[in-house]
Each structure stands twice: as C-alpha cells, then as structure tokens.
Length: 339
Image (cartoon, rainbow, N blue to C red):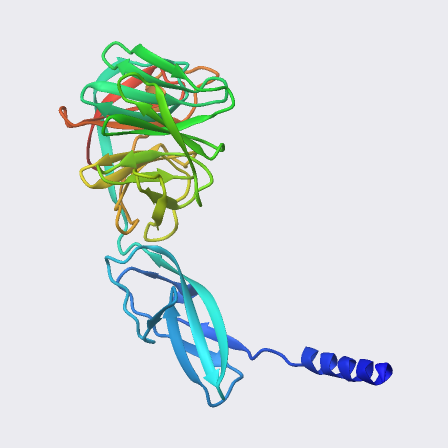
C-alpha cells in the first residue's frame, strides 16, 4: 500500500512539474517602458493563452488600456499589471514603467555679491537661516556638530558636538526646534532652537540613510541618497510617502543638502559631474531648474582637505542665497538668474 501511494505521489509531482505558466508579455506602446508626463499608454499583451479577458492596473488601481498620464502625476517608477482571466483562472504579469519629467530643466547661473569667512574645518552638511542667524550642521564621525554662526564674521556663537558615533547630516528649523539627521545611524535628533539642547530623537523608517532635510512649514522633506525625497510628519516623524526626483531623461540620485524656497525644493547634488543645485517640484518630483555653480570652488583656499560644494541657505530678508562647501574657508552670498 505504501509503495502504491509513493508511486501515485511521484506521478502527481512529475505532472505538476510539467505544467508551465502561460507566457505573458505586456506592451505599453512606449519605448523601453519609459515616457514623459502627459503621455498616453497603449496597453496590450502577447500571450500563449487563448480566449481570455484582460484587465490592467497601475499601482493596483484599475486603468484602461489607453491610460493618460497627467502633467501633475508624481514621477518615477510605477507597476503596471495585467490580469488575464481564462476559464475562471487568473494569470498575472507585472512590469515597471518609468514616468519622466515632461520638459528639460531650465538653466541658471549665479553672481557673487558678497563673500564672508567660513570655518575651514567645517565639513558642511546642513545650512539654514533663522532671521539673520545661520545654523550649520557638520559631519564626519568624531567631528560632527550643530552650531549657530554670525555669518558676517564667521564666528561660531554656539557649538553642540555630537557623540563620536554619529555622522551629522542635514538640518532644518521647524518652529522652535532644530531637526538634524545622522547618516547611517537611522536616527534624527530634535533640539531646542535657542539652547541647542537635545529634546528627543526619532528613528528612520523605510529611508535608511539621512542626507538632506528641509520643511514647508507643515511637512519635513528628507533625502536619503536615492532618487527619493521622503515626506515626514513633524508630529510623530512618520514617513507619509515620497516623491521621486526625475529629469526628462533619468532619475536623479545623491541629493544632498535641501532648502525650501518659495514652494520649491533646492538640492545640492553630491559628487555630480558639476557643482550644481537642482530645483525640484515637491508635488511631482520634476527637476524644473539646474543652477550651475561652476568656478565657485576655485575662489576658496586650495588645501588637502578641500571637499565638494555643499550647503545652501536662503535669506528671506535679503532675498539671496548663501552657499559654501565642505572644508571651504568662504561663505558666498549669491543671486541666481537664467543662464
């Protein structure tokens, strides 16, 4: 009896192993499954099935085969799924589709209108004004700090060292608090704005690294080294979604220091081909502008620890930007205009 059951079981296994899933290929009507915002899909499937019904989904939401993307849709990667029904059986196939910005970014350049001293030992990670008081976050393990600065003289007014185990990253000023990120420790710190006393900390969620930080008065925006900028609830520091930063050609990664200015996110780019700041639409992720800061690094003292351009702060009263870099001895006040 046991031998008979074993034979039957082996027969069933062999037969099941011989059953192959049907071939299903989704066609989007767009080259390499990429298109610009505002484009229309032309969905179809190639399959080995016969006499089937097909349904399409975009991030699990039902769509028609001629789905139209809007210019206001968030950019980045989407999942397109085709579900085929044949004789009450369901077969599914999913692909990734990338939505790009509809237009190339506008190009901007700069004019230096003032130069101020800057601590040459500061590995600048975050920079932001509160009135005319400049707050700066610096990095490197054992050297990371949070500080307030008199930008005219470069004098450090208050200095709060981080524990040597933390690598300081971006910061933002939110109401009466300073919020500072760390790099790979998956932890952010909350300080009293006036005393720089640590009040609390918070863990990261899906964003495993801390890079840049800014806020719009309601939400925080955090970069993590990828193409994503995370939207964070300042009440409990939970991540409430993200945007993906895209040009009309590709995803933009390594977004470093962030600054919120007049409804847009300005972002330094780390180890990019040029010293640039990109201007990002916070709703869609589209890169709407690129500011070329080439030549600025040549104006600072050249030394062995001189590092990349990083740090951008907007002075609302003066309506100008202040920029610097890691281990730069100068802070530049600049105006930006179309190239």
